[in-house]
Length: 124
Image: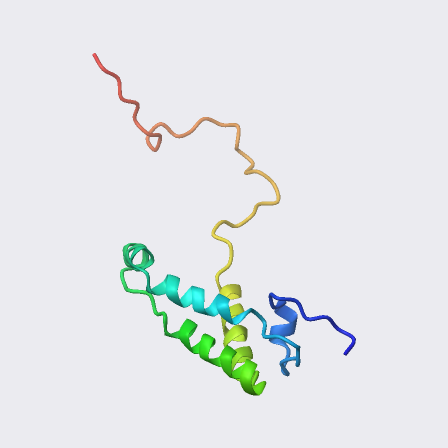
C-alpha cells in the first residue's frame, strides 16, 4: 500500500521472508523469455562452453517464465519470488576478484627483483 514496486527487484525486497504483493512481477515475463532464448542460442552456448567447460543450464529461465505466467494468471508469486531470491543470493556469493587496499605496499618505490622480472627481448 505505501511502497512502490519497481520493475527490477531490490535485494532487501527479495530477501524478505514474505514476497510483497505487487501489481507486477519483479521483472516483466518477456525478460524471462528473452533470457531463456538467449541462453539457448548457439553463440551463448559456445561462449559458455569455452569459458566454463560445460553447456549452460537454461531450465531455470524457462521455469521462471512459466512461474511469471502463472503469477499473471493466478497471482501465485511464491515460486517466482523464490527463484529471484536464489538468483540474488547466488550473485552476492561471488565477490570482487581483487581485494581493495587501503594503502600501497611499503616498498612500492623499489625496483623489481631482477630474477622475477620479465626478460626483455633484444635483437642482435
